[in-house]
Length: 67
Image (tube, rainbow, N blue to C red):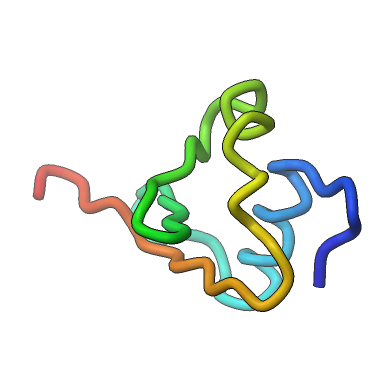
């Protein structure tokens, strides 16, 4: 699904292609191996993406507004 040197934009594209855009203007969270990824900061994501390896599950959650 992702290239070897994937970016946050690539992850977001795969997610929106599969699941659609978040409802009601909400934002998404990505969780891998119990750690939440920064979905808003590409620099921070670069340091975290080493946890995404072949066969790992990436959980995609929608952040609730006023929740």
